[in-house]
Length: 529
Ligand code: ME8
Image (tube, rainbow, N blue to C red; front, side, top):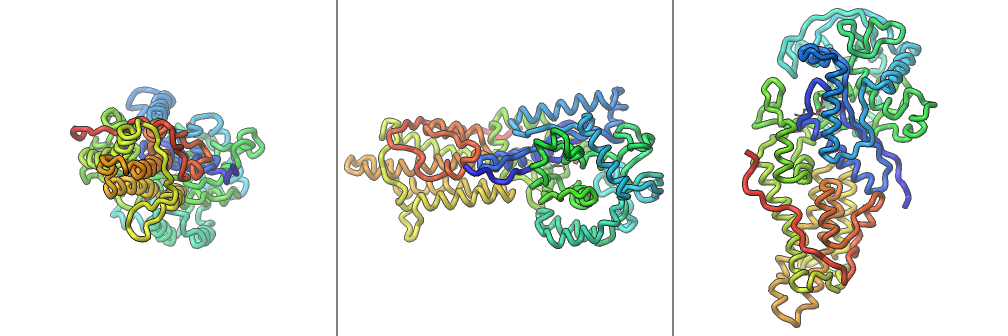
């Protein structure tokens, strides 16, 4: 098997002043689906997530609780890490910005930027969004009517003696970079949004603060603390050891750079799509291939927010998992989430409907019907029947099963690779739908009443079983547990890394093999209350 190019995928690192909720679970699950799919397709994937532990917000939250910022960080970071385990997420590392390996490399990066003149000491006055810890330009402040677009609170006039990053010097290079890389920011609408704002003109950005202490000290000027956003962005590079290019970590991990996808929420796009590539340009490091900024989960049409207290929090998520199973949760996140440019409403009723329609009535029904008929008519043994050249339906021009599923596999893998995860799910489910269609069209349960037609029944059911197997292979990145259950019941090997196309090839099930009855998803009576 030839190994394809290494791949690097990241989530934002999450603030430890908050507890994990649906937003964090969502972004991390998307990355997990992608990472699993790419590993199955033979890529050497590095999947990173972690926690963002410095800054005023953490300092304040800790003060309110009467504990040290480090104690708060330790407590909540552990909570995030626990989520990774509970959710079976396959991240290869979990970085914390308070770790020495991160802090020391951030200092090295900043020193390089000081030496190159990309960071300088200066004075600045401007409109400041306290909630976001972010300055906004005068023009933008006016457009926003001097209110934060996130919290709605008034912007404040702030003046600081700070170190700055010479972002303005990168205006032309960034514009050229955007022109040459139309896929750099996705979805497409967000690309234009960033470009439009960039064309208003880039101002230098402060990279240090003096109004708090909980952060990484500026090399040579410890009274200045490195701004949390600069500190945080570097996590993507420090996790691979890029701050010390000759170090042991870089030797092992530098091959993963540049990231294929930085997956984030839309609210932090500017930092990732403009400031981050400019910092990397200043450091002569290759820029990421794509910043994928998804939209938000909302709740009954309303923004989820801490102040409204309407976030789908961890205990709520756990109640869904208890009722429907982890893979159903992953299915809902992957297929119904706000991966495009619009927000998605999270509703218990919609969750229930999707679960019932896609998983119970389609996937599970097909796997269970097929296995039940094989049990009934062939004693649970895979019947003999040549199926590769069999058309998927009696409709004129219908493709053969082998052509149809090979085309589906190519499509599914292509969608996974392009981060079109709902499309990947749908293209895989199309195989299940084709199996359902042939059962409805040929009605093997009626044919089986006539002993002279058992060869026909054998051929139909072996095609159905093989179709279910192929679909389970293709759905594995989204529903790893349930798909392995189905594959095991069908006596098939689970797909292993590097093996997806091979595993999805028609003809994996051999006549004479054991097919056990299985029902991967059971009907659930009513939505979560
Ligand atoms: O912004 N719907 O961390 P954070 C979907 N530390 N996704 C959501 C969401 C929602 N309603 N709410 C949050 C930070 N998210 C910084 C990042 S990166 C160098 C530093 C997800 O804890 C989404 O991915 O506020 C969003 O970008 C992230 O959580 C913000 O997490």
